[in-house]
Image (cartoon, each protein chain N blue to C red):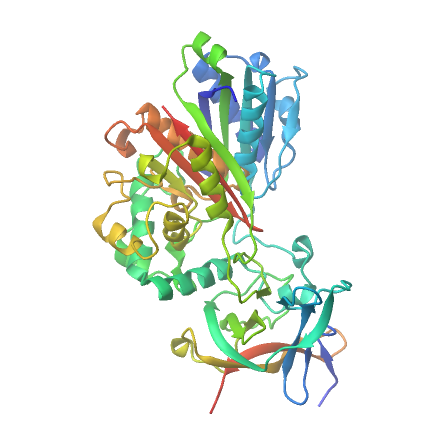
Length: 134
Length: 381
């Protein structure tokens, strides 16, 4: 197992289970993701691990690089928005999902996944949603 | 404000033109518009113009002539053309000028627009994970809309089919041959539920509109097409826009709702008074959603509209009579003015094979774009 590095600081936590870190406005209570950097009006807040699929699509062609940093050998991936209850609707790629099974309202959960390998041979870890497997 | 008239129009065909810069295509359109009215470049007192990726409008003087007139550069995303029109309109309506030009042009590389996160104040990871792709946004907004309002993939196909049917009769359109519904529905899936033929492509082109005060328009014998409204709006809270890492759970309005309401109020009329409409159709679902956002039908009624052909040339409200962005492609700086150009053609009754019947009197245009901006115009004959 090589070294693992997160795609960005302060985006998510792995323990006790994967969850995203949003920002809550100190006055209005509005929640955003990611937490706005360098804006003292927002305080970091851990977002719910699970939520419901709000909308989705499938990325059928490889996005242009830059900015896309995924593997050169592209396979289509699903992505979409998941409504994390009483918090915020967050956009992310999906993993472990059959495209035909996607439907609005399905239960999704946060996972941390390897995106690519950086110039120093480290595995770059990002976040995604996947269907809840009961 | 004083009345302002559109007395001349010009267009460089949309699509791909090797050997001509975007700016030169803008100059082509200006020359055509001037020639139509019997004017010279030196007759113009001012201009507003712009492009998204083909350079500043003030360099148009290199092409047209060094007459010393003020040219204001506009760069306002998809609303670039609309904003140029507003600028030129206000310059005349205020009484400062009698004759000017609003123009837009562009030239984009092939393939999907490629945006970088930093240009939109987004963190780099947003692009690295593969979400800096405009087509995803359109697909996701549409996917949810279809589920909520009972819109079928067949309706999406019918929008594209209509666009290509209309484009056949528009000399400035890029794609000028019909595509059958089955081919549209079964073509390559780009971003579910949208197939290849349901998306427009970045393109090239130029459009120019010569505007005149009432006095000047009468002198020219061209006081026919009057600007009743021209507005742009940015987004309200809770709207769903391209490149949004998150959305608030409390959903809100849309920039198009604001722009449309403001334009109708300015013109003193309502959606029922519109005879012909050009609505932003960067993909076929956008036209469907924009039919409702602009007040021409209720959410979900588009399914019946399309099945019955009510938005076709001979329907109750012809929409995108020149094939819209789907048939013409999208040179960002020129696209909004192409819609206005097309409405002038329709109100003049010179649309030939794409002419809406019944001598349309009131025309409506609508653009929408990143990062949540909308522009609407209303013209009256």
